[in-house]
Length: 218
Image (cartoon, rainbow, N blue to C red):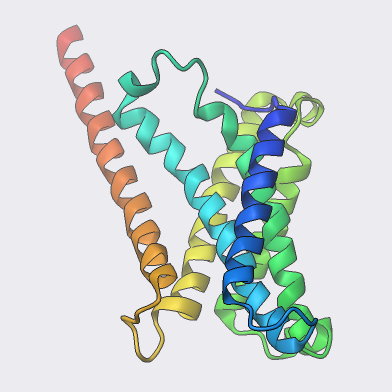
């Protein structure tokens, strides 16, 4: 199944929730409303969290639909029909997060000079996400053909996930003082562990179903 509908109301809901969440977290944390380096740094924190949450939701859809298809029998094409929109907004917020990081340096060249391998991987993930976002519409799929688009989507999505996970591990989890009292860090840890765990369980289920089907045909 290929999702390229890009329903406007899907985009509207995700936009409202993500912008609202970012400004709410920032408003609760900010100490002054003036535009200072400190307030910008405080704002960049939720901006960095939103894209990873969106990526997590995008990755969650596949294994959940495989493990519990009965949950969605009466919901039409939900939640699969949200994958394109979630991916596009992940790319949007990932770009915004990158711009905040570059702004905190002395320009893009200074950012590249001091970039770590893990941050470089995250930057590559952002570029890949932007490419997928621009190709997530019917005309692009028709031009590429469905098989080529599916190949590109699958490979890019998994590469984006693991490059982003490594970046999150480096920036939030594999740091002195962890485990910390920061609930956001614990949320990151849950998401990082849950996706490969569900994918593995879904893989085992697929193997069992295929073997059962093959044995019934023999």
